[in-house]
Length: 121
Image 1 (cartoon, rainbow, N blue to C red):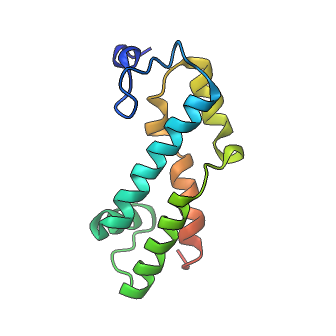
Image 2 (image 1 turned 120 degrees about the vertical axis):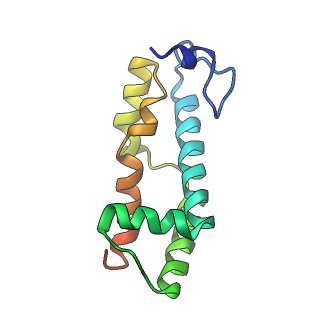
């Protein structure tokens, strides 16, 4: 286990996931992490365009399409975490006690791809 995780995570300082592996605390952590990422993408056009370029080699989209995407990202941020979608990650964090694996998980990007698919990407 990563030593820094024993003393808390950046989102939940003082939280020892190895000792408090409640499903609720993991869900709360993942929801906060997802919402921080969504906030970054919905507030900063550069961050959204960088992601679209990385995923789809798309360097430009219309301003209207970008605003609709940002609206959808805000709606996703307002929604609860899809527990079925994130269940494998929740179980892995619970099993290992390592919340750091959430940073590298592809599940967040997979969730975003569902939004981007609506816009022909």
